[in-house]
Length: 165
Image 1: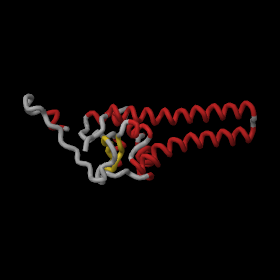
Image 2: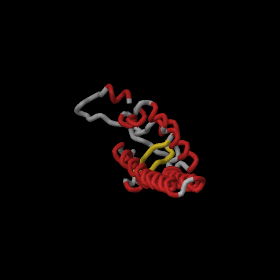
Image 3: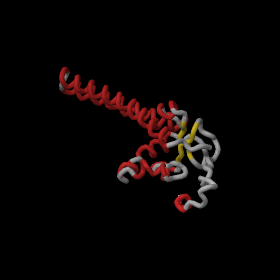
Image 4: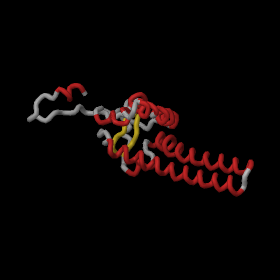
């Protein structure tokens, strides 16, 4: 099984976040319109509904669809899948939700978590590492994911940095 490159994962994430941002901008516009034109409790209700819709768009995309199929909208566009590294199957809704909330480690590590895939043979962020998930090319393999060791080129000989990875 081939680990998906960081570039595809980053672009898939950008698609997912921009779809969610469209819903967020619409929620903001609706709530601003409601507070300017209606006011009072009705404006609060409209604002609440608009922001709940924004949250649900992100939840359906990143937790339900990615949890059930391994692919969010962005991942589907780039034909990559998020799977449990031990089973090779989609991770399920609950684990997808936990994984999304574990991404705070990637942010609070001052970006280390986001760039960890460059040096990790499985291409895992900190959230992936702690949740035992991996992003692979194509559809979920439905079997344990075995990532081949990196091989140094014969003409270069032993690479001490490669041995450390």
